[in-house]
Image 1 (cartoon, rainbow, N blue to C red):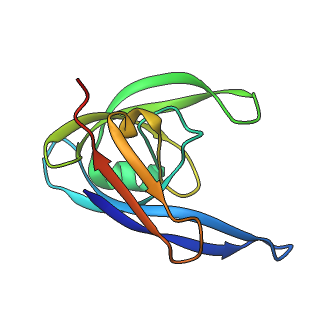
Image 2 (spheres, rainbow, N blue to C red):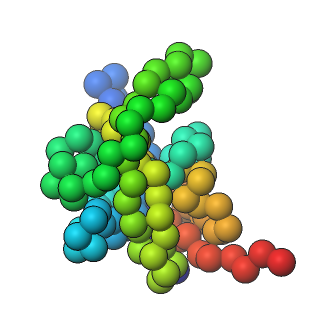
Image 3 (cartoon, one colour):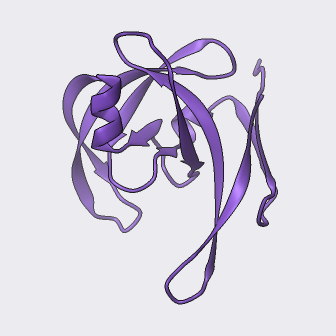
Length: 133
């Protein structure tokens, strides 16, 4: 089980923004794992986004570029990398998109999991592995 918290931040207009966050362990070729705090984003269909600085620190393997569609409908090219993630105990390969902003995990990584979010400040975030038949 992966557990985290809902963090409240404030937009410039005073609006409260709730972000469900968890910590995951990510590794590159050296198989040395680093803990990264990520935002759970169910609108992101990929596995994981990381800023370029983290990708360099992890020494991830580059797989070139790939187009992706943003929430706005705009198509954009992203640098793509390979990583290993500790996910519900076993190691899992993941495709990493290089992107600015906070690191995100998306629906591809969440596949086969139950996600429970208490949608209030300091609420619990729980990701449980589900054995699908």
